[in-house]
Length: 378
Image 1: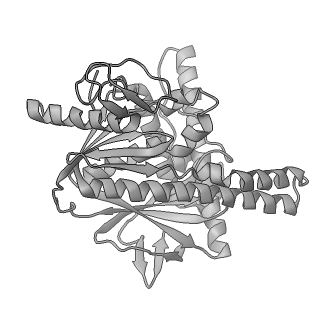
Image 2: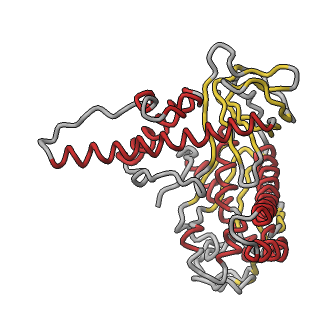
Image 3: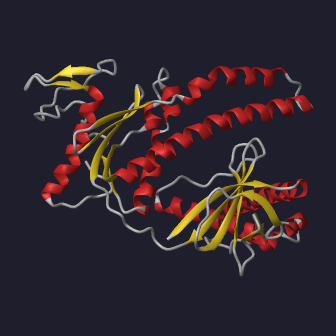
């Protein structure tokens, strides 16, 4: 099993400068290879259809000597990332690869471990062409390091993610099944097979930090472009945004790990946040919630620990159907938080009823003997 471990790096000034240069070289190679592939494709269309062999990162070094200073494996991995992007495009699972922007793209590069070039010794991690860098190893691991991805945030903070090959986690079965309804009033409403319901409060991290973010943004707007004070204001704003992101991820990681630890079968509704964010009144709150990130974390954590994750079909009427008798009561507006079934007169809390219907969905699949798929079709 391959598992990633992410740690905070504390490089010296010289080491940080080298890491920034290597990140830039990896981005340059990615963009140059993409540009040349597009050119080759256009030339092949204009000629007899014969295609030239795409260049390699090494072929650019005579033309651009600064590439010789970077880690060659970082450049090779940039090419592999582009190859993967094209493979996904031709498979129809992603759009056409786009150029990486210096300001918008994720600042990172990946290098491989070759005979101990990446290792941990005396509280430091060794990286190729950089040497030993101080880092905060807040948790250990057992296994062989396969690769390392160095990344830099907008505020200039460096991290390293070590990909480790290790034995599979021991499978420890859990007792419960749980249905999870996601929302804005409460972030999650969870009901297990003992009919115990818990409502998780929505942390609203962005909303709580909005006043401080506005103040920092206005301070940045008043600074002269290109000045040192503007750079200081930019870093301050970036740090405040990172605090919001870190708080959101901390909340989601703790919640998803708790769900996986306590339940063998997890049922979640499939939401489409991008489409839902077309509602301008709710767009900021939907983006702040992070539903998609929670589902992503549940997917890989369920895989790690031998759990079953069921994603209900987007058209599954978890809110409209009565969890007591199964009668469909029709579409309900968002401001209706409680309702009474016209058939059996059961009174429902909207979110609790939805989580019960999701739980019943898993129970129906198990009782029918159809198995437990990762995602249900229509």
